[in-house]
Amino acid sequence: MKKLLIYMVLFSFFITVPVWATSTGLNNIPTADVVPENVLVFQFISDFANNDTPAYMTGFKYGLFKNIEIGLDGNIFPQKGKTETLVAQGKLRFELSDSLAIAGGIANLGDRARAGREFPFAVLSQNLGFLRLHFGGTTQKDNEGFFGGIDKTFTFLDRDLTLRSDLIQNNDQRDTTASVGFIYDIGNNFLVESWMSFPTESGKEDVLTVKLNYVIKF
Image 1 (tube, rainbow, N blue to C red):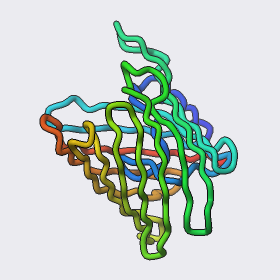
Image 2: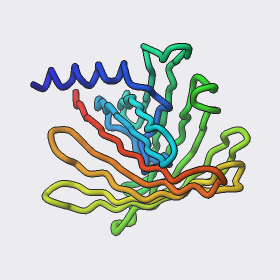
Image 3: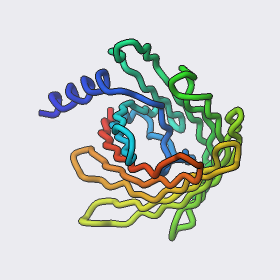
């Protein structure tokens, strides 16, 4: 049964439509967290806005070594008339203390026409005990800015539930996107995430994102 599930996961990775490779983070921002060494996470993402057709994406991220994360999205079977290429991300983490870490990385590395410009970033994460704080910034060309967020993990029905919220500058610092959401361990190596994003940029709609993660430990 487990092997069948893994094959289904791999098959869906190749047939769904990707958008970008996402680093470990909160809702719309990266944090200093990384996937543990020798852990592979498959991700299935859907975005829903009022006036748009839902977007379905997939990808994976992997703990290549301790404190090093890599990720990749791609569509081997592109839509008719379109050329799809792979888009990558990577992150390097440094532990400054038991409660403080800093990380740097880059996302959207690949096809600019599909994913936009590369997204280099640096971020600091601090565990205060009663909650965690995250603050960082990006030097993405024509869209430099800062981002920040908070998260808190509780036990709900004997499993971890993390509530989280973040804010990121965009559109050359003229606008922001705020979000609120959660991630929950539903068992059998599955995690479900969901959040609402609220952009201030004119013409941009609020977006509901739903993400399913499947975790494989080697």
